[in-house]
Length: 214
Image 1: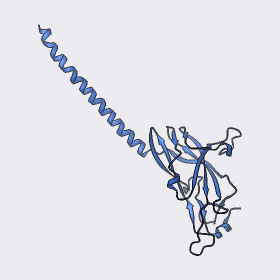
Image 2: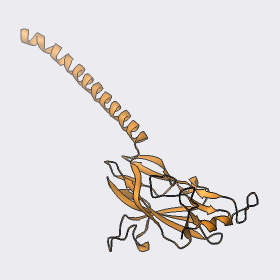
Image 3: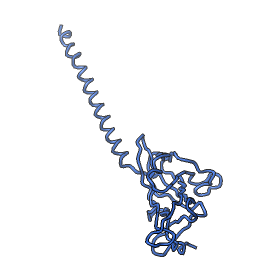
């Protein structure tokens, strides 16, 4: 009889044990979710790449001896210029650059595509034109790819009497990317003195042509 009278309390305690375990699991999941959201909100793995070069004859370097080198797009309104710069995923996780979001963030037309860090055919840095592909692209951890940036010259309006037009420059390009299911926006600075990137001037005074690097 003693055994029979002791069984009901054991049965009644089991649901309590299950409820405690369920509550603990929910708490762990909640904490993990908060940690994941916090991590993906502040995590930015991108670092400057190791190479950069113009990929069109219309892209010219300008250096006046005072400011660091910039690039100008020569040619008529509607003409294009192309630069190729590498970008490094310095983090421990793969990330994906998405194919939307940057066009509407930039006043002047900008198209971003990607190519290998170096061509698998002959190791040409930045790849060949026929190896350039549209986004999206996934960048493995601790690897670089090349971003080909094509810009188009808008109508340039004279400013303060400057012949040729006032200054219109692209100093950064927003890139939409994702990690672990979360989408972020990265402001890719072209004016970073520690990188191979430089601002691209679409409009500029005619005087700037006197400072083309030889």
